[in-house]
Image (cartoon, rainbow, N blue to C red; front, side):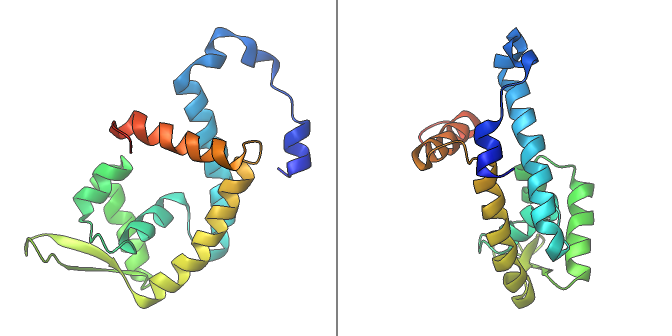
Length: 156
């Protein structure tokens, strides 16, 4: 949606119902719209939102394990295995031995993974800006801060 389309958009008639203020519904609708935008933006890189999330965390230098990825992304561990397998097949990530626990396999990005991620990250950020175009920069920052606080408490 362009800025002009966003400014011209009207609230749907049913949004006036009590459920139109339900946080669960609002978050689900925001996520669904954002996922569609993200998946379109990431398609040029052969990625979807979930595989991009795994690649992003693999590029983070935090050396996440598959279990940590599953927990953080709220996915079943088998889904993470499939996502890592796909990214590994494309040589974007690799499984390595953990530095702190040699039994754990950490997921790290390859040089190619970092290269693709940098380009895909720019597309994802443009997608986010498009989705939040009706908010000012301060409002978008505050929305993210409040969502992080609601998820993890404190002043995240």
